[in-house]
Amino acid sequence: LIKYALQCDSAHEFEVWFSSSSDFDAQLKRGFITCPVCNSSKIKKQLMRPSVSSAGNRRQDNLPVVSQSGMNPELVSRLRALRKEVERNSEDVGERFPDEARSIHYGEKPQRGIRGKASVKEARELFDEGVGVLPLPVLPEENN
Ligand SMILES: [Zn+2]
Image (tube, rainbow, N blue to C red):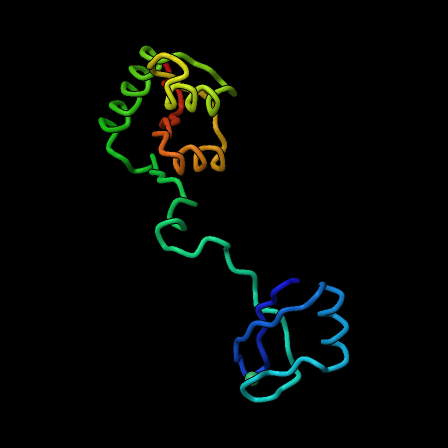
C-alpha cells in the first residue's frame, strides 16, 4: 500500500491509500478520486515534503558557513592560524574519516585528533550518532 498526499483544485489537502502507483493513476484518470471536503475530482498530488518532520532535524540539513568577503582580515588570519594548528595536531585520515571518527567515538580505537573528508550526508549521520564533527574553515592560501 502507498499513501498519497493529495490536493484538490480548491487546495483541500487529504490522504488516500492506494495499492500501487498505477492504481492511483488509474483511479485518478477515471475520476474516482474526489475531495472529501468539496467533492471535486480535480485532484493532484501534493508536492513532496521532506521526510523529517521536526524543525530541529531540518536545521541539520544546512552547515553553517561564513563569507570571507568583507570579513576583518585579522579574523581571516586567525582562522587560517587555527586551521594550521588543527592540522599540526591531528592525523589526516582522508576518506576514511567517517569510519575512523566512529571507531574513536565508540572506543574501538585510542582517542586522538583526526581530520579528513566527509560529505554533508556523512557528517550529518555522524552528528546524529553523537560523534562530534566540525567543518574545517577552507581559506585561500596566502600569496607569499
Ligand atoms: Zn476540495
